[in-house]
Structure formats: C-alpha cells, structure tokens
Image 1 (cartoon, one colour):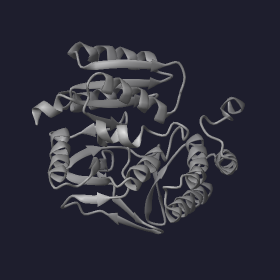
Image 2 (cartoon, one colour):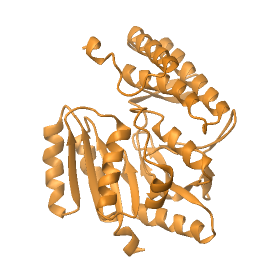
Image 3 (spheres, one colour):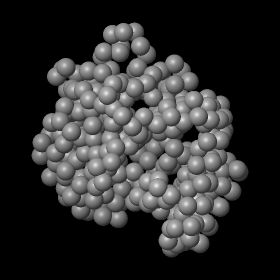
Image 4 (tube, helix red, strand yellow):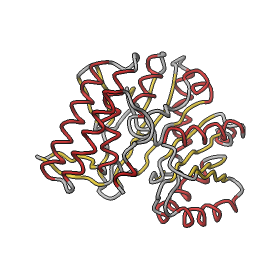
Length: 309
C-alpha cells in the first residue's frame, strides 16, 4: 500500500483561501501523498498564500502553479491533474482548499478501491464521508434514481452512490484517460455533477466509504429555513448555479429527471434567499442573468463581473 501512496498526488485549487485553514489542511495531507500541487486562481491574497506555500515547498513534495486571473475551477483542476500525471501519478486526490483529512484517509480510500477492483467491479472514483467542522454535522451521501433522490445519513458500510462532491475524490489515472478531464465550460459549480454523470454513463461505479473522513464547508455559510439546513452562496455563485442547472440539460448522458430535480432545487433555493437572505436585489439580478445565459447556452466566466464593480 505504501508503494501506491507514493504515487498519489493531491490537487488543491486555491482562491482567496484562508491561510490558517490552508496550513491545517497541509499538515493533514502532506504525509498521506507523494506530492501536493497547488493551483492558485488569481487570489486577491495571493502573496499571503504564496508565502505559506513556499514554506510548504521545503518538504520537497509541493509544486505551485499560479494564474494571473480566475480561470475557473475545472480548468485549474485540469492543470493540476496534468502536472501530476506528468510527474508519474497513478492516482489523483482532488481537494478543495478548506478540506481537512483525518488520519489514514488516503490509505482507506486506496484499500476500498483495491477491494472492489479485486471483485472485478469497475471502480471509477472512491470518496469519503465529510462533515462541517464548524457544526460537526455530517453531509449525506446522495443516490439519485430519476426524479427520486435518496439521502443516506447513517454511515455503517460502503455505499454505491450516483454523485459525490469533487473534494475527496480519489481517481485512477486510467479513469481520466478513458472518461476525460473536468468540464472547463461550467467554470465552477456542478462540475462534479457532470463528471459523475459522465463516468457512470460509461459503466464506472462511485463508491463512498465511511472509513475515510474529512471536514469540509459547503457554501459560503449555512442557513436554516423551515427546519432545513441549507448551503448559502454568494450572488455570483448563484449565477453559476442557475446557469449551469440549465446547461446540464445539454449533456445527453445526464438523466433528464435528475436535471429537472436540480433545476427545481436551484429555483427553490432562490426563493429561500429572496425570503430570508441579504442583498435580495443583487441575488435576483445574478440569478435571472444565470437562467438567461443558461437558456442561450453561454459558458465560461460570468460576463457581468466588470459591470458590478
């Protein structure tokens, strides 16, 4: 197992990251992988991130790649993945900049992958369970079957899921070579939805194991509405969520009922924001622009950023 770990590379995209949390993440990751590749997406606090990343490089296992501006999460991830593969990686571990791993995280993911590959199961990706370190609440595992969505909140055994978030994904080199890289057109949000749909359409399995755990914060903050705890994003992120929920209909391998459900959830969350959230007019403006651009099929960076400054 140690021989395999020596070929696992973590890809971390930084964007205006919390430097203290980045340090905490580094300590949780560095001894579990062969190398860490940071791709910075034009952070406003890049100098602070660079200072700490250069401190990380003293261990001889860190590479830094910086972008002048925000090129999007998917493209930044792909830059990191290609660099890792060129360095001889057999596995890629995708991580958000606020993901903190528990001990034996990578070992347990690799063991789970090996166990099912030995059973001749076509493993596409193995992922962990994760929790919000501020609230200690565990996020559910999602299983989508058409318009029906099942959430598993009790974690006893491995689960064959239909979707997991990108952070924490352990992916073999061969899967990338067969399925392709992350979708750069979506820029941010629903990139993991699209990639999960793509690999399952080709017969790969998505496996979540409770033996691997990490902390993760989804959304900019959490809000409670009628007894439900929901993620809350910025107006700009809402633009991408609204736009990409419509762009998903353009991918033939994504179940149309799943697309309808995601669109409904996006609209529902918009109403929640308009009822209890701040900056309602700005949220509404960005969401309407997102829906409009989604209908027209616009991709990439939000074109309205300059007009909002």
